[in-house]
Length: 111
Image (cartoon, rainbow, N blue to C red; front, top):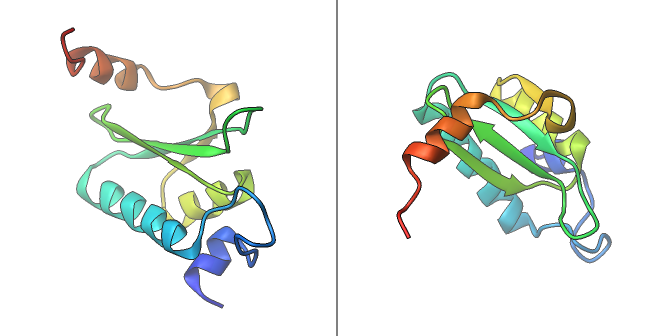
């Protein structure tokens, strides 16, 4: 079984509307792997789907720098976080870490 199938399941974009193509899934995995490998202290936060957005996963580094990508569902996000060897949290239960807000404040672009 391929890595992407283990993480994102065996559905393809034609059978499950709104799910990403294999290329997009591979790009998501690569992006998160590169982010985690290049930044210490990463943690993952799952953002559940809403009426207007798909489930997403935010990875926050120890410095507060962060990145967000769409994932098919919570199960896929948890599998990916496990594969990345980072702790994973439900953002509705834990909230975002204060270091993320602090990083946003110091890197906000002036109007």
